[in-house]
Length: 230
Image (tube, rainbow, N blue to C red):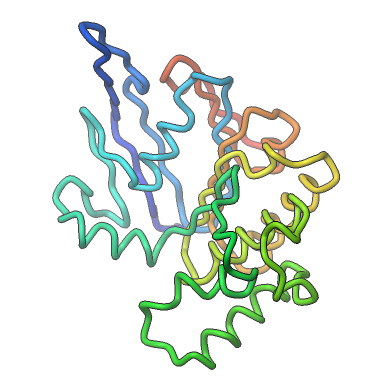
């Protein structure tokens, strides 16, 4: 049976705005197992981005537990958590978050800088990853010289730099036209199918969500229903 990589157990997240309490998450429980492709879907303000932050161990719950490879993140130091998170999880953001002064290849190399790799090893790995997303012909271009779809593919490549077990994609097609969005989803599916990468994707788009094996529907900070796709 596949191991559970990330588990949320009765997770609440409460924000305080003046005298008001805002419950962004209200007792969410879910598991992400190795090799799964999971979509978290909900409208704006449903709590899906907060859930994504919990799954990515970028935030801690107000109540409940978040486990990363069986370890409660509340019992880990921030530096230890950052190290484990950096090895296990790759992030893809809606706004790409590329560094504009660096080329596509340099953006992909950046996460490898602190690793025990030679410059030649880093450059070779970056080339191989960019080849996987069909961007070797654009690897020496800066982000402002690339289309939105190409920038998102660089972001996918960068997320793969550390060979993470899980890739978290937050609205990965949100800033793209439909054709570019389809290309990006195709690459995520390719990673899942050919490399066995675990994918967790946040989206508000039902059509995009149906590319996943399982959809967790979130509304008002709660899991409303779960749908399994064939």
